[in-house]
Amino acid sequence: MFGQKPKSTIIERVKSTKNKKSPVTFVRRYWLIASLIILPLLASLVFNNWYNAHIDQSISQANANTSQLLKKANDQLVANAKLRAEAKAAREKAANEAADAARTANESTVSTINSSACNTASSHSNPANIDVLVNKKHCLQPLSYAPGDLVTSNGATLSAKAISAYNQLFAAAAAAGQGFSVTSSYRSYGDQVSTYNYWVSVSGKEGADTYSARPGYSEHQTGLAFDVAAGSCVLDCFGATSQYQWLQANAADYGFIQRYYAGYENITGYKAEEWHYRYVGTAVAKDMQARGIKTLEQYWDILGGGYYY
Ligand SMILES: [Zn+2]
Image (cartoon, rainbow, N blue to C red):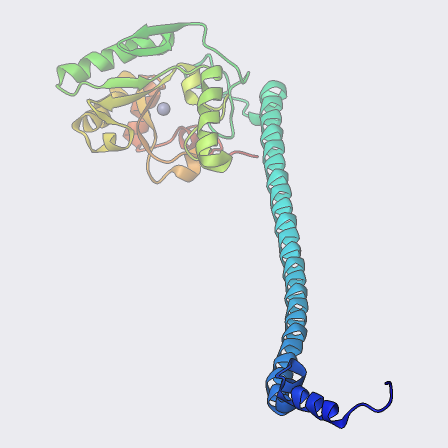
């Protein structure tokens, strides 16, 4: 019963196996074609994986590098901004300190200066006299001098010593059809502190010194000087007016002189001011006119020009 298997059965099996279309049979039959398809696919998959991994790594590295560069650039920007801020703060601090120093120097100059240091003249140095000379080398003594006899009339506040002559001049000009107005006359030491400091803030000390007197150095503080205008013509245009011509011809008869002429800047210390008049009395004014002397510095032989310091 359990001996050799009948041959027919084996053959049938083989036949049946041959006829049966199993995957194994298919692979065996088409292994070459399958290989040609699968192997490249596998190779492609492997390559893709490797390539992607490699690219990812490169991108990561590049990203890391970029981040590092960006961080470095950002750090640099932050450092630069900090440096700039520090430099700006240092500049502002220096400017503030300079301003403080200037203020302190100005205040100490103003409050502690010995008038004799800025006025060594032995004559023409008494501001209570009409022959006083005030210029950049000759300050008022004391610096904060104020006339005790101020009078206000016809728009001007002047020393009583000059006021009646001024009133006569004012009336005579009006009568001749050459009336003028006064824009500035007596200015106190305090007024000049404000005025001078204002111009220093606009032009700096050097600039301000060319056109604005330092406190204690202004002729306006004597109560013997005033500035005139013709209608709306104030300051620089005044020299071109008929009022100016009238004053040139007649002011001396009332004891007044134009204090600052063009061409005498090195002597007076100021540029021309056709509008600034000073009372010196008729004797001096007429004598200067007769002799063609244009400055008090030359007339009294007293040093003028710029400040000592
Ligand atoms: Zn003036």
